[in-house]
Amino acid sequence: MTSGFLEKLIERIGRIRPEEVQNYLLRLAREKGFLETIFNALHEGVIVTDAQGNISFLNDAACALFGLSRDDCMGRALSERIAGLDWPSLAHSETIISRDMEVFYPQNRFINFYVAPISLARRDEDEPQKKNSRRSRSPSTDAPGVVGYAIILRDITETRRTTEQTIESERLNALTLLAAGVAHEIGNPLNSLTIHLQLMERKLRRVPEEMRGDLQSSLRVAREEITRLDYIITQFLRAVRPTPLDTTIENLNNLVQESLVFLAPELKDRDILVETELREDLPALPLDRHQIKQAFYNIIKNAAQAMVSGGILHIRTDRDEDHVSVTFVDSGGGIPAENMSKVFDPYFTTKQSGSGLGLLIVRRIVREHGGEIDIVNHQGRGLQLTIRLPLRDRRLRMLSEGEAVSGPEEAATT
Image (cartoon, rainbow, N blue to C red; front, side, top):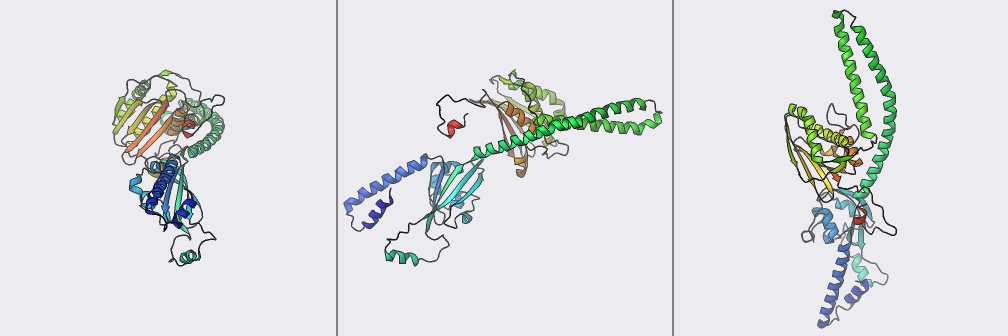
């Protein structure tokens, strides 16, 4: 609908015959429906408000981003329908404002949006009385000439995730180089200390028994500390060093059960009840059984340590068209919301004796299998961690000559 059509309609409003009104209304309805169809076809969200921030239009994409219903929004304040949006700070000038936001419902997304003011056109040929009437308006807090705002929203979740993965990859590369140096520089002295401790133990056997007590205690502490240092180095190397996969065809249910058998004494000692819900028709997958079991060990141990005075660990396996999944749900205290973004950081731990490398190792193993991890936190009620492994290797897909990716849906499957 062109502005010229509306201007001509307004100019002739007093001369329109009754029988012409229906034709004009039909044309307006067609133009409005055409524009709404276009806006609803966009992947970007579009919200239009009046000068006070009340919603006058929003398209399907905007409704999907925020879990809104169009009928519930029309005429309502934007800040009321989108909790946490600081509307007064966004609608205060005639300039375009761009911001990023994180949305938690209905899905956790990152959104870039910009607010563009909609101003009345001020033309030199305006009639004098129109200019006078404009000047005579009562003072308002709205920006001069602004009659509304257009908010354009773009989902940048995948872009942000890709950027974070790139940064993480660079950080892990640096850690890998550091690990090689650390393993060499610390490993050799540890071996030397172990040899000398063995020599001291042999000489200690020739010392009178009444003089051995304190010396044996000191030697035992030294051996324990050497063992602990060796364990830390081993865990660090496992976390950051790429390890070639030695894959065999495995059933995920069998690996879950083997892991539980191995950890049964520890789980029993902690008074933890394990419930399993293992789907019987899981297809076999090419997996490195030792690395996958290592990932399971770390997850189960973390869950057990989170349940201080006993609890329930529920393990469920499932499948869909593209993935086989295993989900671990514990009845511990969950993770504080402010720490959720740090759970995969090296050395981050909430446990006094934790190394902070367990989940980092889990993620490396899962990613090397082409899989992904989802964590759902129920603070005060436990944590749910899901590993999804692809039924077929979909880490990349070669495009044929001349084949073009036509949209974000196709690009997401490569």
